[in-house]
Image 1 (tube, rainbow, N blue to C red):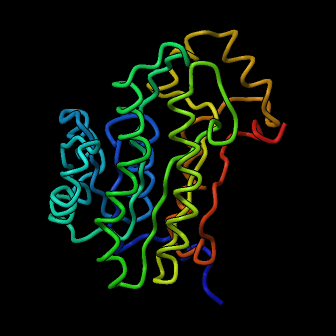
Image 2 (image 1 turned 135 degrees about the vertical axis):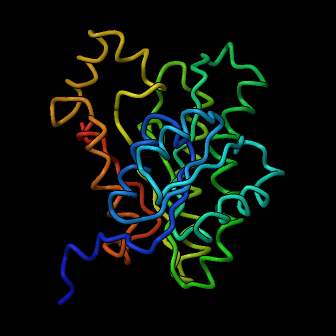
Length: 253
């Protein structure tokens, strides 16, 4: 029988994490590194990425890039693969929420949201999949949302992108899982990040959100570690096409 602890060991694996300069992306990069993976963080903010690399050490590298540039996906794939080899794991944590209400949504805001939240995860994954297919092993982890399945005020573009992530995840699994590549998504509840700063700056609103969960609290960054490692490791070999809600039961009530 396999040692259960070995199922979560990522020693020898290479992971790419987008949006690694802050928030859930940064936390994901740290968790994967601590589980043994070599990690390449991708984001636009060079200094923040350098701070991440310094914290992790020699098993980390960074690539400064705008992943919303669809035409640069294959070039980015080459840059990410340079430090440690082609990634076995890709975590799509980069995202944006313009918080424009329906009547005020602009074409620019819509395009920016869909490009970063939905288009980039597909085309980057498409670029990394050939190498994963050759290995017969790969992990794709998208970031869904509470808004994958429900509507929030001021979230029409964001919600559309995250609803798309749910279906994209299933379609990725259908296309690539026969080759040993699983595709799943994490759906975070309310975690304290830059994207949710306005929520946590309002104590009453943060309290109301916590009260709507089954757990009676909002998330902390460490709550992400276990679900992420599960989906990125051998432990989830037979799990694909799923959206795992990490929301304290918010979506269950």
